[in-house]
Image (cartoon, rainbow, N blue to C red; front, side, top):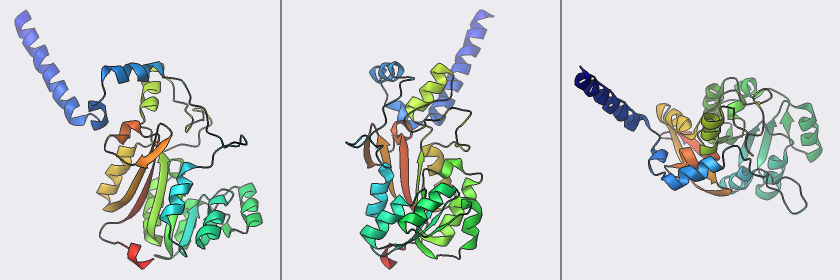
Length: 261
């Protein structure tokens, strides 16, 4: 009886191992024991926020990439444009024809002070008012995970623009995974600074979740970038575990508009 039970247990373990190998995140495969020890030692430690020499917070790392990606003279819709700083710089540097959507009244006033065209309207309803392909670029920076209907917004962006730029925090990042697994608490990091009771993030996603969505919806990734250990670089296959945040330049599969800009 014991031998039979051992055989059954071994078969069950082999089956479980097979399932794990099929489902495991590829980024985990290359991790060694030393990296695991390092990860565990850093669980719960929040990296200091980056600042410029005068002590003010460093502006979003995505802005520099967005400024590089958008050609001179493009038309740009910025969803959740905040105080309009990005659109103001694009207007000065690239002579873009910009339009912002923003709900916060104080941010709207700052946009007006900067001379940035802005509509005080909800992103999700505001997109419906624009016709097809009326913008060259639509930007959704660090906002996707806060939306009630993120998929509808993504589809709306692909409808009204020639090219979309989307960035978001990666909830597959190793520090986030370990904080939750080891400490049993919702993670708090430099890029996810909120507690569970005051976070604006309501649709949490990983980098791999987003890649799966693009594949299922025939969306082509033109460019992909990751922020890893404070450095920004092109996306790599293992970044579902290493990327703190990600940025994608997207367009519909089979439709390339770069040459039209």
